[in-house]
Image 1: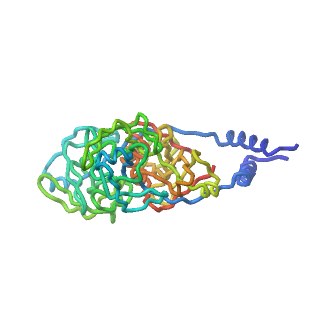
Image 2 (image 1 turned 30 degrees about the vertical axis):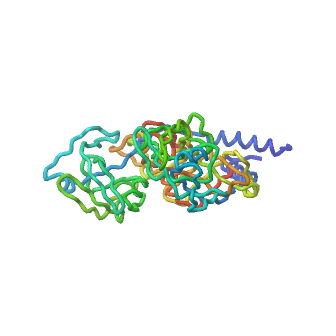
Image 3 (image 1 turned 180 degrees about the vertical axis):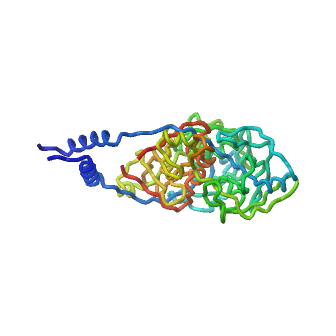
Length: 214
Length: 214
């Protein structure tokens, strides 16, 4: 047989469509504003021995909540007031800020997945009872997709996998590359981004974005 | 001949590489902080009749400069101090802010290419001599690629074309889709993004990003 280049291109396109069908799945966005997770010890130190946080709102992630209480975060160049505490207490204190916030404070935190705070940035945390010098624990959160075990199975994704998520319905169209999948019992379907990423894509909480299967 | 599916995939990959070689070109980033362009009339109103701006820095775009002078921009919810004036004077006054800034001011500007300010947001502009009520002119700048006529020719791009630019060397990998090409004598190679977009991709001025040819 004698194929011309146009025919070959058409045939290849058809074959590719058959062996790699274009498939996408929608997931809701959750925009994280700056916040702090406190260890039990640091909570007691900042607010007083035996202090209990007051829940004002359940978060979408199971058992996580926003507390009424806030702290002040101070860096070499500036201050962030009313930084919301998210409960319950964690093993270690962690401050999650945007790069915009980092410039205000004058710190240079790494982009990290929650819990990975070794050699991250420091800050001073002011509570009503005490002031804590946090040597490390300040990070810029790496964007990630939360999924329950069942949702992960439905979407054919596994914990730790890196995927592409795209936002193409807003005026600022963006593809987020190397989004980490975090799945298990303590997770629920939500694409977590910070305020810088949300503003760069004009996204708000509960907007839908697409997982791109390649 | 008898092809297995693995062989077919390999053959197709090889053919695709031959007929559509992956081609990219590097361009430098320019991060735009909030700024204002003033009309001659509004400059005289805010600073006094016959006032001349004082250049402190040439910008990369031909004939554009940062002035020593700043103004205060006020919205329903907040204030932006020391907003830099970029010269020379333009036909109409235009304020370019990030979405982060828009939340501070409490305004809802559209994403627009420079000059397209019809039905955009308003604000109050305070100068040393007068206060101006700007009915429209506040925009969030749409990201765009400046190119001289010669650079556009070299890169095989035309004015108004929409392209994809990717940032994949930083920790936060992003593809910017529908980036508008602006080319001509008054332009010089630079990918303009605002501070939200820069922070979402961890980019700084003079970092390189890639044009993706598809």
